[in-house]
Image (cartoon, helix red, strand yellow):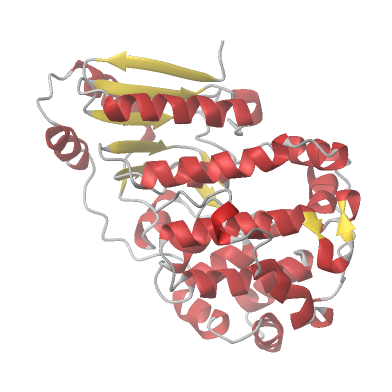
Length: 364
């Protein structure tokens, strides 16, 4: 079976991510298949809307998408494979295409929705979650940053929730995702197959009719997030990562101590980079944010200003520890949050390309 199943039923284009063993992690081939399909359907008057889901063994729709294929990142970085550059350029262009899509794009975000899975869902016009949803941007765990437009959509969460989610990688449930603006509605996962099948079987007359019908399938969510919003705003609104950590470690509450312990395990260098990313992105449009993130990801794998590349990069080391050797003991450099200097962070935000040659210069 193909990794992406493309179907046209009635006047709806259906996309099923079908790489269940890898929790539908995106490969370059999958990104290209999604892009070609969406571009074709964008111009096809027969297609009124697009629906996308994952597939897997658990639940009706398995996992949505666990992110990019991080083992590929590791192998490609060590081998000097140019497809690593292509992967991020084409993935971010796909994210932009989804945000700007002129037809309803309905994302059924059941199960795991992380990293690249957020990139192919956050730009959707209708983002549906369930009681099974596990949503996160956990990139600091592998020495990376919340990319795929993460700066853009996290910075638009209420208060300083974006900084909290970006730095810690905290996992949200479905109702929490709606409460912080990262989903539009929550439905019982058992209803998903009926919604999916009804979309294909209903003789819709317009895109607006499709969007209205799907929006009425879930009740308005008035839940308040169960996260500690007041504490998040108090701690994660501070100016620097050391200031956030110092305040957390000085607080005796279980929440503060647990949050501090999580931050101590993340890449110290990337925590500083990520805080700067989210704060910059708050004042940026989508295209500029994606261009900034494309610059950043080049620096992650080729950290020229620190004399690191290949196995010496923070990201390759993070992936090694989590997914390759699985020793869960990354050798971060620097090892302590307090040892990161502004001179280590600032070059991540300097583009390696002149504006006219940037790989995402065409985005608007």
